[in-house]
Length: 387
Image (cartoon, rainbow, N blue to C red):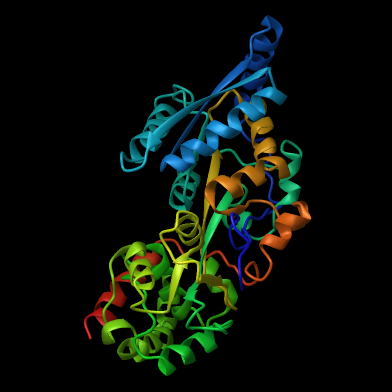
């Protein structure tokens, strides 16, 4: 499927569960109303601190969205606090937890951006606020499945997914199902590669998709260790295709490792992150013969989440900001800046945007298996890589 640049592929997977938190921290809410009311009465904007991390493109995104929001909401000031990628998000999270335990409120961190691991950990630690459509009406625009995984404690506002990236000069009809992909790998020895799953999400996605291939759909949303007993068939498949992958069992390091093989023509088909492929296509690093295709059942992806600190006294202003982030206007900026796909359903986007995603949005799934991902990597090392 030819993608129409500069937009990305795939549909996001965000969703909304209808579980609402009864009486969620009424003390915090009263403080929020009082603090924000006093700011409004004095004529000063309500200011809140938004901590986020990532590469330069993430900073560029928020640097673009912040003035858009503040132009529409002059009574709210979003203070962006950027933590460059590689410097570690853990100290920020620890600061939130420490402030809560010490009874010192939010620790001046009101809104936080991170991945599923911090969503889950923060939910266990009781530091995130449960969200709802009453406070954030545009939550109604997101798909109803993925927020179920996070029980409304976070907003997956953008995402990227793993797709098949292929050289269209060599492949005219790429696989469209997982069964077709497995058949293709065997019929085209050493033309397929995936990276060591412990070194990058695209390889991890491929491995997890194979491991869960014949299991009930609900198992990809379950972290119960008992599910490990069902993995034998999937690992058997991974061992079976081992002699047919690149180098008869060579697994590159990191997501870029397989992209380099595709770029150099050493292989013609790989699993890859959609945003990485599109960014490198736009920068001319990948030849324009490289195309993308999602399969059915789909590879899993990686939403990025926004979480509201339960101890924040700026919730009303934050909710206004989150509602803006989920608006079609803001989502188009997100798609453009991040080479990702939107956090709201495509039906809420322009027809042009919907057309840009045509053919690659189907089948995308989100896995939420907790620590089982680490267990899969361990077993892959012993059962597959070591053979």
